[in-house]
Image (cartoon, rainbow, N blue to C red):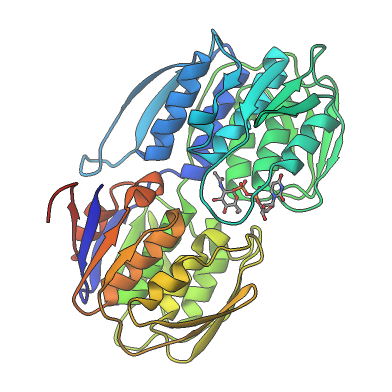
Length: 432
Ligand code: UD1
C-alpha cells in the first residue's frame, strides 16, 4: 500500500494547476446513462473514484474512450472522456462496486428514468456519519417510482415512466438534488424541487443536462423547475474547477507561508472559505487565470468557522481548515453541521502535537507554536489531506499511511506540491 513521506518546513512558491471537480465529474458521468447519444466530458480529473465509476458504468454497458493531456503538458487540461450508453446491458449495480463509492448509488435515477427499472446496492463510501439515502428514495417515490428494499438492494420500478411532482427536501442534499434533477429530466410533466442544493456541482450538472436537451430553470437557487422531455441527446461539456482542491491548496499555502497562484479556478466557487482565509491573515487576490494566495512573515490568526451548505463554508474543507488552525495564534472553534462523526482527523492531528478537544459537533483548537512530524494514518478523503497540510508545516518527517484515500480525490497531489518546493515523495508498497 502506498505511503507519502513529507519533510516539513518549506514555504510553497509557484503555480498549481487545479483539476476538474471530482464531485461534478461523478454526476456528469452518471448522466451519460440518460441518453443513447454520446456524452463527451472535458477536464475530467484522473482519480481513483473516476476510474471506479468508469468500471461501474461499464458494467451497465456504457462504452468509454479516454484521451487528454497530463499535468506538465502545456497547456494543462484534464482528460476527455467519451461515454456512450446506447446499449444498456444490465440495470443492476452490484454491491461489490457500489460499496466502494457512495456516489455510484446515483445511477438509480437515470436507469429508472430511461429504462423503467433499476436495482442498486445500498452505498458505501467515506465512513463519515451514517449518510442514509432516504431523501433520494423519497424524491424518486414522489416521481412515481415503486421502491422496495431487498437483501441490501434498492429495487426501483416505474414501468409506465416517471411523472413530474413537487419534491420538498427536508434538508439540503447534494446527492438528492442530483438524483431529482436527472430523474425529473425524463419524467412526464413538470417537477418543482424545493430546498434544492445550490452547490456549483449541481449547477454544472444542470448546465450539462440543458445541453443534452433538458428543460431546467433555477439551478443554483433553492427552487429548481424541470419540464420533462421524452428523450435527451448527447453533448459536450467541460467539468468545472474543483473548489475543494482549490481551497485545500490555498490552506496549504496559508499554513506554510509563501506565494502560489492556483490556476484554472474561480474565487466565486469558494468565496466563504476565501473570506475566512483572509481573516487568518492570508492575502487572497484574483488573477486573470485563477487565485493568488500569499502569506509572508505574520502568524496565522485563529478564526471560528461553521460548515454549511453552499454558499457557506464547505464541510469538505473542514478538516483542512482544522489542520491550519492547529498552528494559529489563539483558539478556534470549528462547528460541523453537515455530517456527524466528521472528526476522525482530530486524533491523527494530535499526533503532530496539536491541541484539539471535541464538544459535540464542535472542535476547539488551541493553536500551538510548533508541530512535529509523525507517522499518521489517512482515514477518509478530506481528513487525509488535512494531515498533509499539518505535515508541510511540521518539523521533521511525516509518513502518511493509507494514501489510497488521497488518490480518490486529489490528482497527483505530490507532484503539484513538489513543483512549489515542498519535500514530498510517494513510497510505493514495500519501499522505505
Ligand atoms: C456530497 C459530496 C460530499 C459533500 C456533501 C455535502 C459528492 C460525490 N459528495 O455528498 O463530498 O461532503 O455533498 O456537501 O458530491 N442525508 C440524509 N438522507 C439522504 C441524503 C442525505 O439524511 O437521503 C444527509 C446526510 O447524512 C448529510 C446531509 O444530508 O448529513 C447532506 O448530505 P448530502 O448533501 O446528500 O451529501 P452527498 O451528496 O452524499
